[in-house]
Length: 253
Image (cartoon, rainbow, N blue to C red; front, side, top):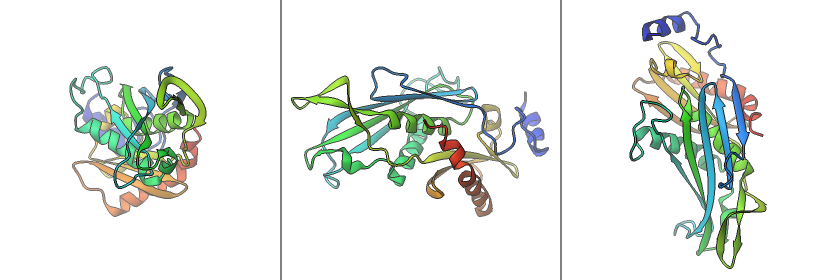
């Protein structure tokens, strides 16, 4: 299927998989897929598949926030997920993916960082969020966010004994997740706006916008692609995100 054919379909208001422009592929989310993580989840959007693991450890707080814990988000894009990915240190795409997930959580205050404080100025909980795409058929961003939020929702603090973290032994105390800000990623192709692009559609994309939303409030946006997006198109994308956020959030169990 060549790019010209994909573009011609889109200009006729059609998609290669016959979805509507504002329609997601089938979404499946599984929880507790890793026995070694404090929280974990697998998200499939169509043939795109992502696993997220949450680990927690005690560390020292930053000097400017002595009574707050923190999150550290990383993404590993390997050739297992796509032949376009290479082995080695995280590239720009992995860095951007991790940054988008981090920003949606951090800017919305989805986690109460003050409740991650163990002893002010000395010890805090550090929450490590590791993103591992297994297959990239487009829209890794939204799949990663859904898997992350689900993993965080089910995460429990590890036990501490004699000031040592007992990894692999979880307590009954859950991570303080206050909000679940979902992310919608749109693609602009010509004059058309599409939601949840598959890999074939991403190959002809002009620009991309990811919108993080919770209860009608926009908490973060990230643009990608070479071409500009007009304010009018941004407004259309935001309207779709707000309209569909309850539907998408209902997938997080």
